Length: 559
Ligand SMILES: *[C@@H]1O[C@H](CO)[C@@H](O)[C@H](O)[C@H]1NC(C)=O
Ligand SMILES: *[C@@H]1O[C@H](CO)[C@@H](O)[C@H](O)[C@H]1NC(C)=O
Ligand SMILES: *[C@@H]1O[C@H](CO)[C@@H](O)[C@H](O)[C@H]1NC(C)=O
Ligand SMILES: *[C@@H]1O[C@H](CO)[C@@H](O)[C@H](O)[C@H]1NC(C)=O
Ligand SMILES: *[C@@H]1O[C@H](CO)[C@@H](O)[C@H](O)[C@H]1NC(C)=O
Image (cartoon, rainbow, N blue to C red; front, side, top):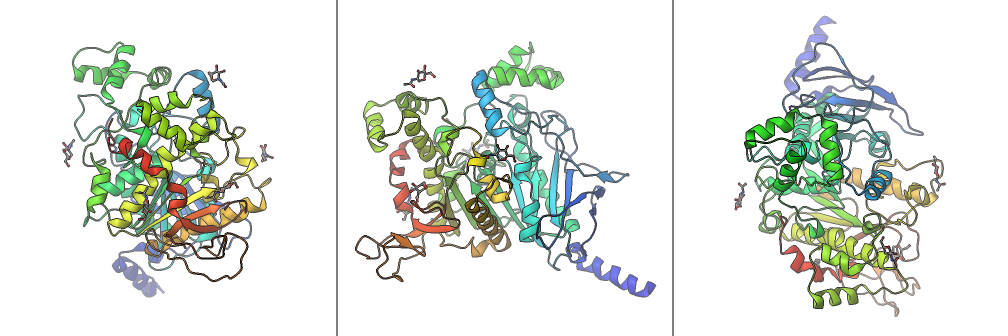
């Protein structure tokens, strides 16, 4: 027996991939830092229970304030990984009404906050892994690079692990001044700490995911909003021919290539205002040390009330200065990409606004003729100015940037798929009338919507979307299950149909097949049909106004 054990050990050692040795079972894993003890959960009708490892250190925590993440070192005692760790210090900008609204819609979990926050969470099936390891989905949360936390119900990866046989990792990263400090005393590669945290988490996955049954060569990065900017920053900063620590990417509602109304500002003035408010003075280095020594709560109060913005700085390492051009030239990571946006993103972001001209001015459109052109392109109809602003916001900041990125990706010879999420549910309306708002697809992707009062459409659409995301993670080159961008010719299969389209085919009133590129997957409602899957449409149907915004995008990422 001893002999056989030795042989087995030798076989495992020479295979070099311990994933093959993941025989399933209890929630204990041996990682580089030591032993981690997790917890287990079971979901209804799932074949596998889920091992959850919550709050695993992927870097030294707390990190040195305003410094890059460091190696976590090793732990002599087992790490108890049974509960989410605090969020990194979050920023919610004043005025008070805005502060309260953002908290209501995007921070309802009210997590504890701390600088001791560099932890990640792993959700893995408990059953034995295949010899080559399971696919891994690596989640980067949104929050404008100002707030957010991996440890919340919405981002619980248990359903993915239980029903799709994939592993989910959700990572904390520093945001606002703690993640993107703009002191001139810092080195040029020491400003985008939040992005470095995300990369440290990815390195951790490369080195440790085998211990959970995962494969380091089957990683798909995905993120929403600022998490999607982060995914785009990763895609565009790994040059063609490099070996990025991921083989697929999903962008949900956000690109860093065509920021529209979100172009990044020089963050140094904000740093100076913070220093002044803290009464820090002297040389740049002296000010940096002074801000480093200030209580975190005091810093938080100042950046909240003064609404200071600490945007990322192009360093050509974590963020290139010209992501759109990089993509067009093909000099980016060549990995398949799935990306999309929601039909009413702007409704949660424009609440309280009722002056369209003022909104346009705020995004830099002051020319009278241009303003009139825009107003004519988005007629008020029976709606309110808020509806109009929300629709412009949706297209300018999310839908049209995604359309351009999808097209640029496909044109660079990189497989791309695109979706358009179009369904809303009463139990996900954080505020009346938000419709298909920014971030409302997340509980569908993760199946973390409230089960008790979910509708049949909600259940079915969530199952479909979770499946599509997992299908993509398992085989990115195969796509999520509909036509890649730039492919998909129409062809008639149904004669005499009265509905406009069926089975992904589009017929005009006379029953003739319409021409077009059939490559945009509408998820959920299609016209008046409350769908629970995908209907493929021509991008042109929804993007016909995108050309309007080209002059804005031409201004680049950095305003
Ligand atoms: C980044 O690279 C661009 C050229 O691609 C250059 O113009 C810019 O100065 C570089 N920025 C930094 C911070 O190195
Ligand atoms: C527009 O908003 C302002 C400020 O919130 C408010 O005072 C005004 O009554 C609103 N106007 C309309 C027409 O809703
Ligand atoms: C994307 O490409 C399609 C097909 O060439 C084109 O019809 C559409 O206008 C493009 N979208 C944008 C936003 O440029
Ligand atoms: C759905 O149920 C949750 C509790 O699970 C409750 O808070 C919420 O108000 C319900 N929403 C609707 C629209 O019924
Ligand atoms: C999105 O859903 C709404 C409401 O169900 C519907 O009116 C609209 O036509 C749908 N959009 C598309 C592109 O089908």
